[in-house]
Amino acid sequence: MPEFMAPDTFLAACNVEPAVFELRPDYRAMLLVVDGFTPVAGTQIGRGAADHLVAAAEAHARALLAKSTVDQLPHVAAWREAYRAFGAKPHRTRNSLEALTRRAENGLPRVNALTDTYNAISVLHQIPFGGENFHAYQGPARLLRATGDEDFDTVANGETALEHPERGEVVWSDDAGVTCRRWNWRQGRRTGLTTTTRSAFFILDALAPVTDGALAIAADTLADALGRLSGDVTVTRRLIGAP
Image 1: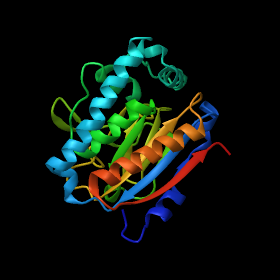
Image 2 (image 1 turned 90 degrees about the horizontal axis):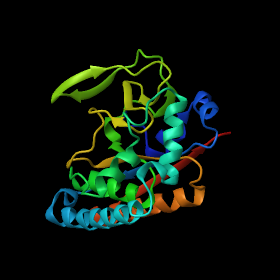
Image 3 (image 1 turned 180 degrees about the vertical axis):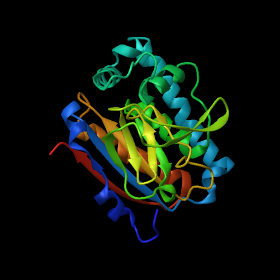
Image 4 (image 1 turned 45 degrees about the vertical axis):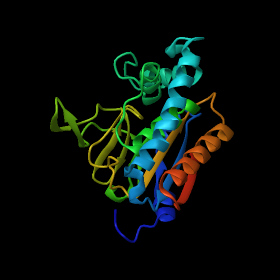
């Protein structure tokens, strides 16, 4: 990320290609840059704040799944349809919301305070979230249909690996390559959040029946939680929808 690219400039340059809206005209992306994290996010204080949210998310998932199977939850079902539309098999590559909701019933994974916080809020609001290191980005974020030649920096079998998306796959990308495959399935290693992250970029993905209002509330919840986690932070946001 060039130093001169301020959060508002970055967000203004982010885009969703028309081919994605042709696939799902109801798609919206709420983008947030949260700047000013302090080391408290990696301390016991930060861990405690994240654990409180994780416990609430796990309880919420158990309540949801007592009434419905995961694949019948409204937003999970919408994402399954979206995956089928670009050729992915949702029972093999689950969208991040479905994967987390399934795991939350028996216990969400613990990664770090920042990641655990947004994972928990994703489950609580039933919206897929992506969280990445803003300063690791090279150019703005773009959601597009892949050519199949793009690079994706990941880990396979415990080893660093370079993969390529399938042609037509919906991916998030910057100038250096793919940052997240299959819309919201798997994030890359290069832009991952760590305990030393000071500025984070978040993507909240929405399809009908999620409303713009519900998406805004989820973004507000995330901003508030990160403020409590790390003290004073600045939040810049942008909502992208079909023209």
